[in-house]
Structure formats: C-alpha cells, structure tokens
Amino acid sequence: MNRYEAYLPLLQSSLRKLDDWRSLFGEEQLVGFDDTPHISNILDELQQRLQENYPFHHPQYAGQMLKPPHPLAWVSYAIAMTVNPNNHALDGGPPTSEMEKEVVEKLASMVGYGEHYLGHLTSGGTIANLEALFIARELHPGKAMAASPNAHYTHERMCHVLNTPFIKLPAQENGSVRWDYLNDHAEDIGTVVITMGTTGLGTVEPLAELLPRLKNAGVRIHVDAAYGGFFKLIAGELSSERHWDVLNQADSIVIDPHKHGLQPYGCGSILFKDPSVGTFFKHDSPYTYFTSNDLHLGEISLECSRAGASAAALWATLRLLPLSEDGLGAVLKSTIRAAASLYRKLSRSDKFETLQKPDLDIVGYFPVPAEQRLSAVSQLSKKLFHAGMSADPGDGFHLSLYKMSASQFTAAFPEYKADDETVTILRSVLMKRDHEIFIPKLIERLHAALDSVQNGS
Ligand SMILES: *Cc1c(COP(=O)(O)O)cnc(C)c1O
Image 1 (cartoon, helix red, strand yellow):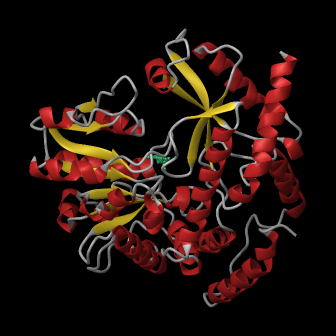
Image 2 (spheres, helix red, strand yellow):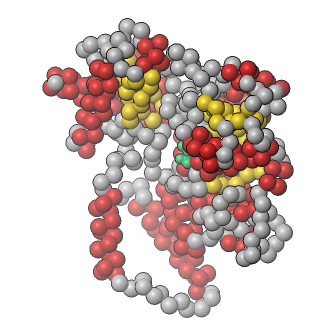
Image 3 (spheres, helix red, strand yellow):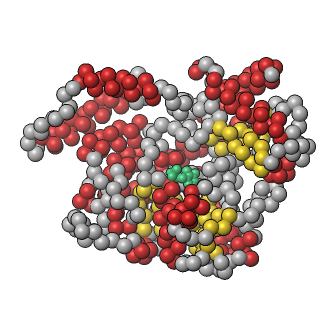
C-alpha cells in the first residue's frame, strides 16, 4: 500500500460523515454521477497520462522546487473540496475562512509580527508579491522598486503591471550584489525587495545589514520569502540566523505554503506589518453578499475567488506539524542536512566542483571537464543532466540546470577560460525529507553517469 492509499479509509469515513450532514437538507439528484464504466476509463487514461511526469515524489528527483503534498494536506483538500467553499467572503465559506485566519495568525507569529498585522492566503507567491508591491506603490507613488539580480523574475514583471519603475541592482564581477547602490539612489527608491531564499541557489539576502540604513532613508522593505520563509523555524541552525532574527522588521513578507509548507499548489501568503494598509483595497460590488461586519478576506485581497480547500489543507497540516522547531522545523532540518551532505561529498570529489556553500537546501555544482573552459563545463553539465533523466527509472536522477554569467563563474574559478558569455551548471533542490538518506546513492549515480558520459564521448 502506498502512502496515499493508507489515507483512503480516513478519507472515506470523513466523506461519509460529511454526506450525513449533506443529507440533512433532503435527497439530492446525483445527475451525471452514474456513468461509472465511462468514468473508470477516463480515470484510467488520466493516471496513464500522469505517468509521463518526472518522479517528483522520489528523492532521485533533485531538480526543481517540486514535491507532492503531505498526504494529510491532500486528503483534507479533497474533503473540503467536495463542499467547495470560496474564501473570498465569510459567506462563501465560514469555516474555511476561520481556518484561514487561524493559519495566517500562526504564520504572523512565526515571523514575529505582533498582534496587529494584516494577512491572508493567496493562490501563490506571485500574486502575494504583486499585492505587496501594489501597497508599496500606493505608499510611495512615483518611486522605484529595487531588487537584486537574483530576485524572482516576476517582480520586474509585476512592476510593469503596476506601471512602476524597476531597478535591478548591479552586481560585481564576482556576482555579489552591489547593495551599496541603494545608498546612492535612496531618494529614487520607494521599496526594496529582499529575497530570503533565492529561487536560484537559495541565497538568504542580508536583511540585517540592510535594515538600519533603509529604515533611516524611509525606504519600504518587502521580504520575498516565498521559498525560504519556513526556515525561520530553524534559524538557529543556519549561518543566516541574524537575518531571520530581524524578519519582523520587514514591512511585508511573502511565504508560500505550497513550496516548503507541504501543500498542493494554490497556496501562497502575504503578511503586512501595518494593518492599516487594508484601506488601499477598494471594495464596491453590486453583488456583495457580506452578511456580517467581520473581516471578509476578499476585502483585503486582490483576488476574488480562492479555494477554501487550500486553507483547510494548510490548517490540518499545521495541526499535525505545527510551526515549531520540532514540527515542520524537523522536516526543514533534514533538507539542510541533505544539502550540506551533498555539498560536502561533491567538494571532496575530484570529479566535481561546488559553488558557494548552501545557505539553505539548494546546491550549485558542475562536473569537471577535460578542458578548463566554460563551454566544456556547460556541455558536460547538460550531458549529465540528460543522462540522469534517460536512465532506467530505478537508477535515474533528475537535476536542474542553472545559467550564470562568465564573470561570476571565473571569479570563483579563475583557471577556467571564458570562451562563452554564460555558463550552465547543475543545481539540486533537496526539499524532500528523504533526500538526506538518499545523498550517498545520488553521489554514486552522479559519478557512474559521469564516467559513462566521459568515456562514451
Ligand atoms: C517560487 C517563488 C516565487 C513565485 O511564487 P509562485 O508561488 O510560484 O507564484 C516568488 N519568489 C520566490 C523567491 C520564489 O521562490
């Protein structure tokens, strides 16, 4: 029995109890629910098509930020979805709206916001960041938003949507971000986006160092912790601890439960330190159905309809794995250990070189080619990437590719000839709990595949 199947009796019993509630309202006509042979064929076709996916569930998948949700999140989502509440308004789903407020309170307390804050779930990190940038623009009209070159690409896109100038901070030759640029241009910049856990290599940008000067200059600070936010739970274990310690001084924070919160897609979140920004969300609708004066989540969000099931799934998951060091924190600790272990083992191997020591659970590395030039690094990295994907399912591995500038690469590896403007290396996101125990196998498979790729060419 697989881990999802084990939950089926629980799902069934919850659905039956919900059906009892449903039948209190009288018999329903189950129109369209009766064509079982046809449905069974459709589902069979569906599961076959799903088998064309990469093995996101397995630790051999060490590529992008992908993993299946916790089975409890899945089963809670499925149960709530049969009701299909809409968290736009309390009237669209009173219980799941309450659950949303409860989980948002937990997120706010995790980041260290006090009793007064404003926040809600979103359908993802991009829309949550858009909301933060929209408020930032309202508070600093005409001023630019600035972010490092490692920020998520959607910040620039959303500045375009908001008709707001976007400044991509310059980088030094070695790739390090020129944060000092902010000092010289403080009067043009209204808001700075600081990413804690970049999507590329999981870098935690230096919030603690930047805070005092930005606050002095009256610049607004938005922390994009879509990927990294939950690492706050285990900050004591991280070299970036001091930055997490001052997270509560950010004006707004985005955290994606569908990244490291074990949730299915459709679950981001936005938190604002100052609840009064809620007044910027204009609300006037002819079909308003707000029957109470309590806060309706649709009054403080850009989106209207949102799955109440997302709130139910997160609520249930956090009951099982609370936002504590021993709860969800334990899962994150194992990802940190997995990344440290892969980094250490690759650093010791003479067949591989590693980039910076990982801040979180993402490792950048490349196989050492016969000739020390950038194009050879790119070529060999891509070959290894494809070799892992085309191996037998039981022997494979799945990595991702990461492109960087020649100057950034040669700053770290000056012995390499820059015969190209960019270089492609390998990247592994080790966000699954079982990655830690799989690392020795992954190392074995990487070396074996490299051997055959090098000898075969
Ligand atoms: C994933 C990610 C986003 C985008 O979030 P979505 O949920 O994919 O829309 C934004 N910023 C960072 C740092 C991310 O890792």
